[in-house]
Length: 89
Image 1 (cartoon, rainbow, N blue to C red):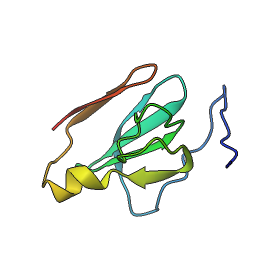
Image 2 (image 1 turned 120 degrees about the vertical axis):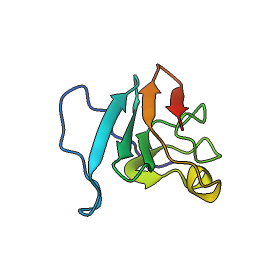
Image 3 (image 1 turned 60 degrees about the horizontal axis):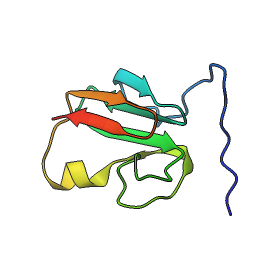
Image 4 (image 1 turned 90 degrees about the vertical axis):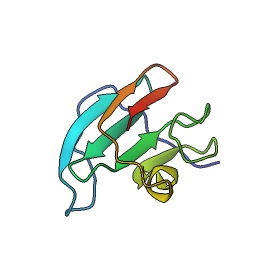
């Protein structure tokens, strides 16, 4: 099983350099960011599917939520709960 680091202190975001972040939200063990272009990136603990990638895989690397892109949806806002992620498109 992959080791996923859970940090209880501030850390730099490791995102692709060309992304401009407009909003960040943190759950108890996962993080989500919205870019100025309306894309959603998530990472952290994914046991309950809260990362939005269609599975329960955890990840230390930020990944774009491809389902929203495939549906042509532009993300306006994100709010993370303890094991959930709410997105306004």
